[in-house]
Length: 90
Length: 277
Image 1 (cartoon, helix red, strand yellow):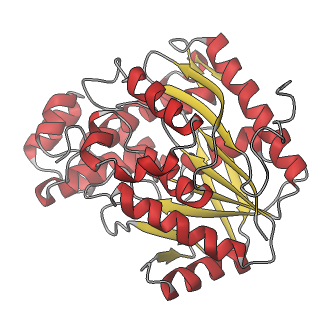
Image 2 (spheres, each protein chain N blue to C red):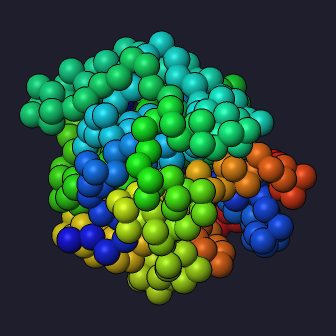
C-alpha cells in the first residue's frame, strides 16, 4: 500500500494526460495559458476535472485521481513560464 | 572490465533553477559535492556512464509503464525551461545490457525514442566528465504504482554488475534520486531527515544489502520512492562502504551525494579527489 503515490485510476486518464502535457509539452502549455478552455477541450476533460484545474485546487485534483507529482510539476512549470525573472539559473 | 566508479546524486530541480525560496548557500554546497563527483568521473576515465534514474512521468506516461527499461537510441534528448540536452548513447553497451538482461530473465523494456527526464540530465549538467562520455539511461519505475520491489531492484543491480563485468568498456554507474521528499503532497515541507540519516549510516557501514529488505510501503512513507535507483546500484556494488560526500537537507528535500569505492580496491585506500582524506 502506498501513502503518497497511488495507482492512477483510469477514470482520471484525461486529467492526468492534461497535467502531463502541461508539465512536458511547451506548445500545449502555451495554448493552455492563452485559452485554458480550448486546451482542456482538446483533451476531453470532464466538468469536475476542468473546474479543479481552473481553480488550481491540488486537493480536488488529487481526489479526482490526478497524480500528485503531475499536479506539482505542472504548477511549477506554469510558474516558471509566468515569472522566469524570479529564478536563478545555473 | 570492472566498474570504474559508483556514485549517487540528487536531481532536485531547484539545484539547477533556483527559486527565491531555496537557500543559495545550500545549493552551492551541493554544487561543490557535484564538482567532486565530476573530478572522480574524469579521473576514472570511463567509456560510458550508466545512469540509473527514476522517470518523473516524462519519458513514460500512462500509455506504457515499464518496471525496468533501457534507452537504446543513438542519442537521447531532454529539455527543462531554457535548458536543452542531447547526449550520445553508448549503443553497443546499451544493447548488450538489454540482450544480456533478458537472457538472464529480467524482462526489460527498451526504447529507441524517449524524451530524457531531468533525473538523468540534471546531475549530468554538473558532473559530466571532461571530455564528455556517452551515457546509457537505465530506468526504474519509482512514481507510478505498482513499482518494482526493493528486492527486485537489488537483484537487477547484481545482474547488471555481472553483465558489465563481462564487457570491455570502463563503466561508471550513477544512481540519480533521493533522498526524502514528497512532491505534490501535504508532507512536502516535512521530509523524513532522520530516516535518511539512518540509511546513510547503514550504507557507510557497508550494509547496503539491507536495503533489499525494505518494502515499497516503507519507501513511500519515508518519501524515498526514488531510493529504488540507489538500491539497484547497491546490488551492483555489494557491501562496499559508502563515502557520504554531503547530506544537505533543504526545507523540502534531503540532498545526498554518495560515492562507493570500487570493489576490488580496499576501502579507504582510494580517497575521493579533493576530499583531503
